[in-house]
Structures are given as C-alpha cells and as structure tokens.
Length: 189
Ligand SMILES: Cc1cc2nc3c(=O)[nH]c(=O)nc-3n(C[C@H](O)[C@H](O)[C@H](O)COP(=O)(O)O)c2cc1C
Image (cartoon, rainbow, N blue to C red; front, side, top):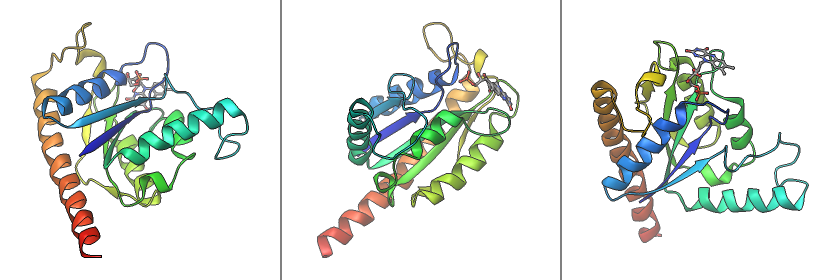
C-alpha cells in the first residue's frame, strides 16, 4: 500500500511539518511506502485554471497529479489558522479531483493552542467528502505543537506518540479494508 501525505503548512517558522515528517517516518518503519508532498517545496499559485496556465505550473500539476494517483490512501496534515485548515492546502486540493476518488483519507491537525486544531480537522473532513473520498472518522490532533518535538525532530511528548500510534493503526486498518475491497471488485469484474 502506498500513502501520500499532503502537508498544508508552508510558512517560514512553521511547526506542523514536524508532525508530517514524523508520520512519514512511522509509516516507513511499518514497511509502508510513504510519499510526503510538502507544499512549501512544491508551491502552487492561487488557482486560476486546473491544469495551470503556465508550462512550469502545468508540469508541477502533472507531477503532483501522478504522485496523488499513485497513492492508495492519503493523510492531510494541516495547521489550524483562524479556526480552520490552511488556505495553502485548500488551494492545492482544488487543482485535483479524480486523484482522490474513493480513496481513504485521514486528517491530522496541529495548533499552537490546546484544542489541537479540532475546528480545522472537522472542516477538512467535510472537504474530504466533497473530493469523493472516504474520511477516516478518527483524526489525529496535536495541541501545542511547538513543544512536541525537539530540534532534531525527535518526538518529546509520549502522549502524542501514543495518539499517533493509535491513529496510524486505525488509518492503516481502514485504508487496508478499502484497498482490499477494491482489489476484490477488480478481480471479480
Ligand atoms: C494565520 C494564523 C492563524 C492562526 N490561528 C490559530 C487558531 O485559530 N487557533 C490556534 O490554536 N492557533 C492558531 N494559529 C497558530 C498555529 O496553529 C501555529 O502556528 C501552529 O504552530 C500550527 O501552524 P504552523 O504549521 O504554521 O506552525 C494561527 C497561526 C497563523 C499563522
């Protein structure tokens, strides 16, 4: 199974990327292929046309499309900004649609406050439904994210590490069930 992680935090001084990189590492430790799409490294301009009007944008959209298509399941990692998920993430998602079709998607949110991005995560789960994808009911919330990792990106919070393990267990179970059902349907066709 291949997992794409889409990271929607792009600002200088960001913190949520630590969560995305941690999850990528944890997936790889479980033998799962993980592809981290960091929108700070692959920025997309504000959408004016899905394919992108400029050849450079078009090439980037095609490359991201191929990476999203290759994924059996996805994780969206977002910071909470003003009670919602990041605009950079929504802008990137709006470039694509069929890439998400009937795929299992787990939502992860991080915040500076104590609520761990609860509002961002719930709203993002609704967006997942509009993408024609299946939202994992469980989400991973990381409150006070600025204190969760050390400078070497090692996790310091045992509580968050435990929550992340449980979340990945759920996500991989859910994703595995959907992937298996799709393969069975293909085999029967
Ligand atoms: C524009 C903006 C709005 C924010 N709004 C909230 C908020 O509504 N609730 C909250 O807990 N933190 C809020 N924060 C703090 C972020 O959650 C915090 O920066 C955290 O580290 C995750 O975002 P980051 O990946 O950009 O660092 C906001 C930060 C920015 C830049």
